[in-house]
Amino acid sequence: MANMSLLLEAHGLVKHLGGRRVVDGVDLVCHAGQVLGLLGPNGAGKTTTLRMLYGFLTADAGTICFEGHDVSRDVGRFKRQLGVCTQDDTFDGDFTVRQNLEIVASYFRPRPSDVRRRADELLERFALATYAADKPEGLSGGFRRRLMIARALMHRPRLLFLDEPTTGLDPHARVAVWDLVNGLRAEGLGIVLTTHYMDEAERLSDALTVLAQGKVVAHGTPKSVMGDMLGEHVVVLAADTPAIAAWLGARGLGEPLAVLGAWHLPLSGEQLADFARAFPALRYEVRPPNLDDLFLKLALAPCAA
Amino acid sequence: MRGLTAAFEWQSRAVVGRHLRVYLKNWHTSFLPPALEPITLLLAFGLGLGAYMASGLEWNGRRVDYINFVAPGMLAYATFMTAVFQSLFGAFIRMRYQRTWEGQLTTQIELRHVVWGEVLWAALLTTVYVAIVAGVLSVCQALGVLQLELTLLPVVIPIVFPSACAFAALGLCFTALVPTIDHMNLPIFLVILPMGFVSATYFPLGHPLLAAISSVNPLYHLAEGVRGLLLGDGIGWHLASLFVLVAIMLGGLVPLDMHLLRKRVLGD
Image (cartoon, rainbow over all chains, first blue to last red; front, side, top):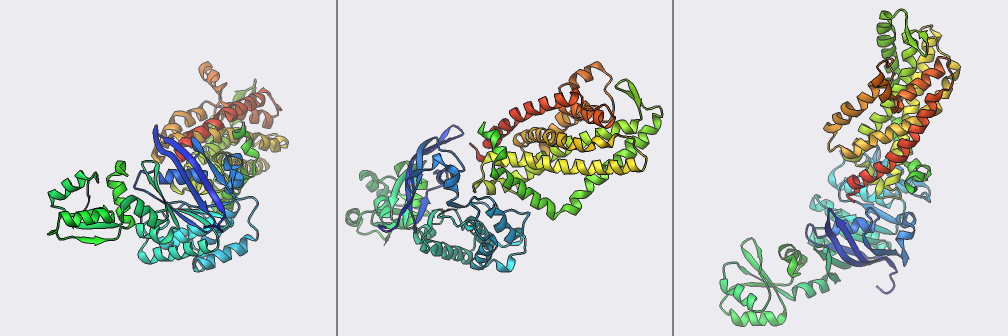
């Protein structure tokens, strides 16, 4: 991380929407060549945070700096450095795939150089060349996403925002998008990513910022975030053991996470040893924690996070 | 103030450029309505209805043929309807269904540019349409159907553009307010069509109440101003009134559009 320059830094972002404090003092950073995963359950404030970061919404309080400069002083210049791939398809249905790339270039100053060649390059890279003369509506979900990402890259941004880039895609198309994201990171692009897919966040993110109820509840590498928030182990057992709830309650560990008739108990090494001593005859499975556990913990018991 | 000066920024031109590019792709179908509409209207109103008014009608203290009365009104009505409908339906479709605005707002284009881009585009398209209508009227004049002062016809174009900007700003206001495209009927029947009726475009306003209402209707001043030009009365006070109303509308409605659309599009 030491050789990665700091691109984006946000401090104390606050946003009220419809009278509700949707984002409440969010801090985050993203470096060049880094994928920052923004995680959290529905309503955690991910998309609102992202929208403030890419200038779609104005923050009620807080600062956003790009390479140390407050972006509010020159939003236009800041936005020249950004590429944005929104959650929904917002390509221009009046144009072909190639024209979509060309028209988006006209929305930036200084204009991207050699627009035609840049469009060719992106069509090739995103395997869209075959569909260059087609309207985007005719593309499959995976290729639509590719077009959306290609559009976001047309003006050679340095920071890319991907809002749930693989939602609704089949596994093959998801992997293809992951490969593209990995390639972009390798080229030194900073990427801020929101996703609901925990495997995606785990595989792609160098750092995670976890939001719950508009606040940052954890930040760090995926492993450290899971360790901080969940512990080292997850015990999985049948959800019909009343003594377990009492045992958890006595230690202030809160309610167990209930998933399809099973309880998932995140525990530290010491707590696991206690648990084994307390229930020697119980049948259960112990596995390492993953981001699904974290997500469930936040979604099912956000106040406890 | 920043909202008003955005009209001159490159981002607003980029939005207009996008719409122009789409229009040029479909120019052959886009060209037909403005060319056919005046022909239909001249046949229906001018020759059809005009046949029942063989002695013409009184306008500004003199008798004029109904077809000569209605032809300048058509230019005004085309200005009004094209601008309003483009900013109502065209803009609503781009905002709601095509999500063109959302795509533009993720770039260096900001909402104020999207608003001005829509207003300027509606005005540009209207000016092109009115130029086509003016061309059709010129042909009718050459065929002896009309007797207008066509030397002043080019003066109409610079009058049309700012007027269309004001009408488009009015249309955008409803675009920001109506929840669905089906609700467009409300502003059309409650505001747009009444404005069209109380405007002396197709018939003179004799009733004192209608005359009083029309004095604050920019379409009325546009119709009477253009009529004055094309029937040989020169540039009259109607054009001065029109420009005052246009300035008030642009100064008031464009910031209102931005405020309403900020809420609607950005949820802010």
